[in-house]
Length: 114
Image (cartoon, rainbow, N blue to C red):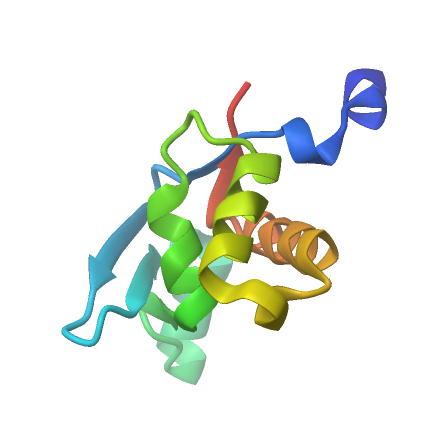
């Protein structure tokens, strides 16, 4: 854990989790598909009708960022590409990008390359 505290977030390399399926709709928007597995999810499916698969529809910026996560591009380089594409609409750029990637990671949609 100490290594992570000293690591610069912008040097991290995000990758789409191997548990996620990625599809692109006709309009270019990206959809992530995540299976809801496990005992608690199975219970929720039976009792509450929770779906077996969750579909996460990304916005324009998310749909732009996700294909760039190639296992080689770090957060800093992603930010540069986002700025080129979205300009001022992406500001505050790195704060938003870091929060976005952290949120995707917290839901198990994105991993960090070691």
